[in-house]
Image (cartoon, rainbow, N blue to C red; front, side, top):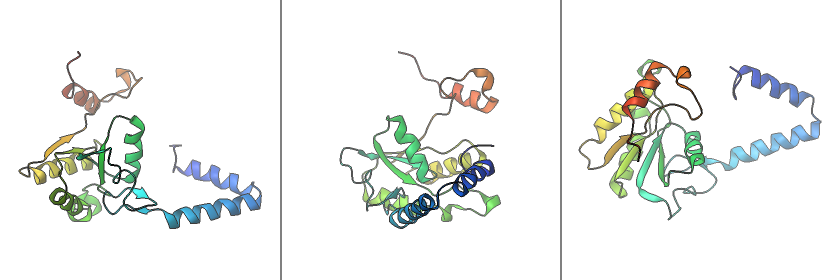
Length: 184
């Protein structure tokens, strides 16, 4: 694994820093400290922000009746890059994982229920991964919100754009077939 956060990436960063001029490293360290002090969690949705509420929660052009439920704040960035979603968000801050000691009470589910009581939300779109914990969390949430009058959906899971079928695993292909839509 050589992605961001991998041991190899950390090694490259460390080597770059020790070979860089000390003043540049000092400026970088100061910038990191300032960012850490300024960035906080949005009290409404759980996104990372410098202002309360965050820019997405305070944007009147966004559809406040739609809530996209994500695992971590970074997932918001991924969805925003698509440019296709114009609702609001809610960060769970994890997934149910009994093996890791994470239960529903450890997630931001109660905060979401508070939002459901205070805001006019018509649909919760669950945008969690397709691993065992993501599936378990999605099913748990669908059951928990059944009967609230709020539609609960889950994003479709399929093939990455530009990829061939030979690179997809059986579960991805199965879900891609199940989530198919009519071509117009």
